Amino acid sequence: MKRFRGLRNINILRNWFLVVASLIVQTLARSAAQVSDSRRLELTKSYGLGLLRDVTPLASDEKRFMIEYLNRLKREEGLDDDNMLFRLGDEEVTDKWLKVWDKGNQGHGVDFSESGRADIIPRLAPSLFKQEPYRLQGVDIYTLPQSFTCAGIVLAIIKSASVFPLEVVRWAQSINLDDPSNEERVWVSLREAIRQWFKENEDALRSARYSDVKPGKPWNPSRELGPVPTAETAASQPSSAVAQSNSAMLPMAKYIWSAVVVLILLGVAQGVRVRARRRHMKR
Image (cartoon, rainbow, N blue to C red; front, side):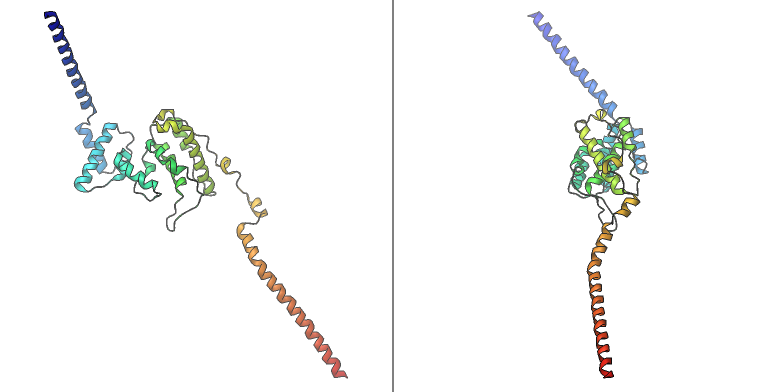
C-alpha cells in the first residue's frame, strides 16, 4: 500500500511539473511574440509620417499590432484607412473589398496591386477568366474590362510579394507593358500569360505553398496575337473606315451618273428642236 501511494505521489508531481513547464513555455513564447514598446513607437511614428508604405517586411506579430492600432483609431478617432488594413491582412477589410470587387466595381478604395498579398490571387481568379473583349470604358477616366485589370493586378502582386521565389519575381519584372504602338496586343497577351501562369500554379497558390510556385513562359506578345500589320499590308487592304466610305459613295455616284445621262438626253433633244426650227424658217 505504501509503495502504491509513493508511485501515486510521483505521478502527481510529474503531472504538476509538466503543467508548470507548459505554462512557462507558453509565457516565454507569448512574451517573445509581443512587440517591444520601442518598436511600437517606431511603427506608429512611421505610419503617422506616411513612411510606412511597404508592410511586406513586417513580422506577423508587428502586422497584428498595426491592425489593432488602426482599428482602435477607427473606433476612437474615426480614422478609416482600409487601404493600409488591407495590406496588413485584416480579414474583415479584405472580405469587404473583395466582395466589392466581385460585384464588378473597379473604382474601389483599396489598391490591390500595391498590397503584395499573394493570398488574394485565388480570390481574383474568377475575374481573371472572364471572357470579354479588349476595349476602353469610360468618358473622362478610361478603364479596361475587369479581366484585363485583374491581370495587371496579379502581375503587380507577383512583383512585390516577398513570398515568391526570386525566379518568379524576375519573370514578372521581365514583362514590359509600355508599348503605345499596340496596347491591345500587350494587354491581351498579358491576360493570356497570367491565366496560363495561374493554371500551372493553382494548387500551390490555393494551398499557400508559395515556394513551389514556378515562373511563367518567357514574355513574348507577338506569340500571342501573331505579327503586327505593317504599313504595306495595311495599304494593300482597305481599312474598315475606307470600305464604309466607299460603300456610302455608291448611291451618290449612281445619282450623279443618272443626272448626267438626263442632261445629255435633254441636250440632244434641244439640238433636234433647234435644227427643226432652222429648216422651217428656210422654207
